Image (cartoon, rainbow, N blue to C red; front, side):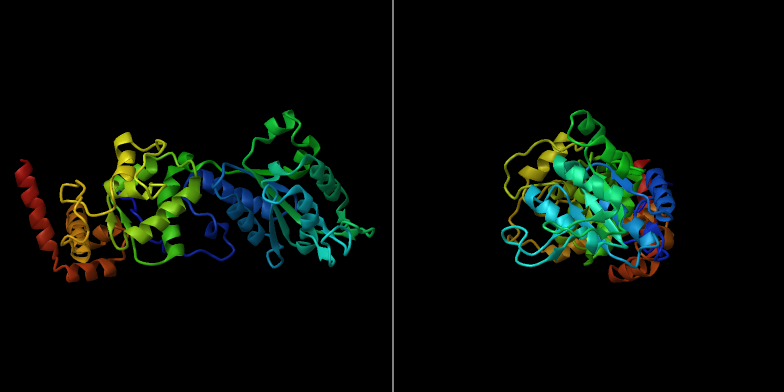
Length: 375
């Protein structure tokens, strides 16, 4: 019997210096990233992190900083694509009082602020071309000049950069300097898309639930199959959004594949949206067409208004009892095994059994009856 967690927070304990504390996942790709972090952390060479948007590049950068000898110093992040060109130079290098309109006081830049620590240049591929020239000079000379200043200021800053862009293409199109690329990409780390490391989805779900807090949530095996087969164009960031919605909409509930459809709805209206990558068309359509409410025993959507005699608490208790019995049947009455199937501690599972007046014999009797009926 294959056992895999459905959700719920992880109880794994890690050493505070272990990069695995910040990188959640069991895939070979994530383990390789952990190894690369350990190698890079022992040096001060520039690191370039690549990967699609939402895959966790900043998480990797922070893990690298915390594993390095500079962990007690500052980690400073700058999004090169989010700051206007006229402000980016001042943001990075600082300025002197009166150097331009609005410069009413002297200001240190992020290079100075991160001196002896780490400067994370996110979305480096979006940096204006003329700013790339100035950045290259700073990297070569290891000193800066504030705007409007004449004094050279020595800096000792570890540079980690990141981008979702194809910099080889950007270089060919003369949008990114090749010499700057080689300066920044001394030690490259690539993070694969979430769709290419599906074994990380369940650990990430448990991690996000633990971060978000609130009541426990569960995903049925069918819902987990749907999550693992989805294309995740938004990567781990999109997965976290789905978990946050689930915690709000289905606290303490085993989420079915039909209920999962409502979590992928991107708009509050019932208007149709574009087809979701990896979701069956009939499944994706339910997210837009069906209002949020209860499901019947056979999984069909119950369109009754929630105020029409619908008891949500009673419904949730009935659903929880069904899944507890189902887990016990699958585990052939072994409580510890049943608890593992729904990612609960054994003591929590036993307490829920008491609450629902469930005994192991009841589950096994129902299981044998099912076998007789199938025969």
